[in-house]
Structure formats: C-alpha cells, structure tokens
Length: 229
Image 1: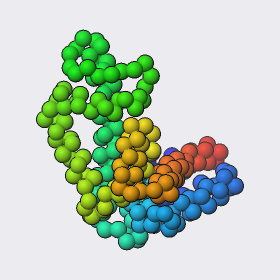
Image 2 (image 1 turned 90 degrees about the vertical axis):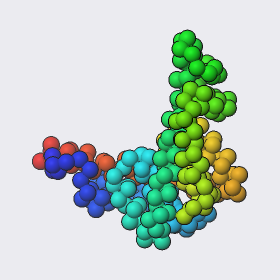
Image 3 (image 1 turned 135 degrees about the vertical axis):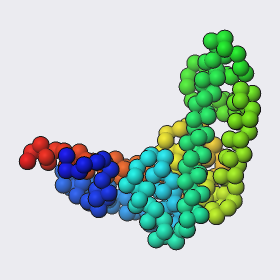
Image 4 (image 1 turned 120 degrees about the vertical axis):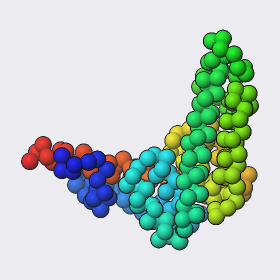
C-alpha cells in the first residue's frame, strides 16, 4: 500500500483528487457540498458544529479533523464543540437504549422476566417510544444516571437548546435511527425550530456521510493505482 496505515492524514489534503475516476460526479458532489455549508436557515457556525457532531457518529477521522478546524474558523469555541460532541454521543446512546427495548420485549417472551414491553410483529413501532420505563424497571440506577446525563446534554449551555436539538436531528439521520429522528424532530419543533432549519440540518448530515464515503475512497484509488502500476 502507498501508506503504512489506514486513515492517513494526507488523504484529507488529497480529497479533491477523488474526482479523477469520475470528474462529473465529483463536480456535482462538491457543488452540492459547498451549497450545503453556506449561510441559510442555519448559520455556517451551527452547520460546522453539526458537521463535527455527525463526523463523530459516523466515526470519520478525516471529517473530525476537517470540522474541528472548520468549527473554529466559523467562530465556535472548544466549549461549544465539546457540547456538540456530547449531543452526538447522547443521540447514539439513546438509539442504543431504544433498540434495547426490543431485547427486553424478546426476553419477556422467552420467560426471562422483566417488565412487559409491547413487541409488535413489525420493527420500529412508534408505540415503542412509550416503553421507556422498561429500562428503569430492569436497571433503575443505570437508567437514572443515563437520564441525568441526557438532560444535562440537552440543557441550554454554550449552545442553546434549539441548536442542540438541530444537531441531534442531524445525528439521528446520520445513524438512521427512526426513534431518534422522531424524538429530535419533536424536540426541535417544541423549541421553535422550523422546517427550513431542520431540512438544512439533515442536508449537513447527508453531506458529511457522502463526504466521508468519498474521502475513504482515496484508499480504494491508491490500491487500484498500485495494481495498475
């Protein structure tokens, strides 16, 4: 391989060369990407912080580097950036716990005890959102500690609650969790967020997921070029 390790930092500087295989596709993507990160219903600062949070939930080291710098350049500080990362962690965590309700329901069906959890024949039931109490019944102390952290994360701080809800909504789409999408949409709406703001947050998530896929494509390109050489 051209590099002794994966996730070579020089790939980030070489990102533009991903267009060599399909220039027109790359041109269209970068035009979209640039438009996403312009000032709009959301500021460049909030979009950069949202991108930083999404970079963490999709675990893209290139994007984390890029949007740590991008957030600083857009006027964010370390406290705001840290809160954005906690939002990403909280959304990831909430998604895990929501899926954990499926485990509790199946365990009850298998005669393992625990609180009864409605488990319909189909997955991703909206009714599942009403089963939150099952976790507290199964593990009270852990459930309360988790909820205390979650409340602290989404409280007003260096970032306002609405900013956190919009960041959370983007993260929810990036991890494709219908429960988290539902919760964060409701949270953003309740805090005064509108459709334009929420749509821009989702486009940030989409741009980062797409960008993460393409920047990782540099590994593919290097391997192909080595085989040809």
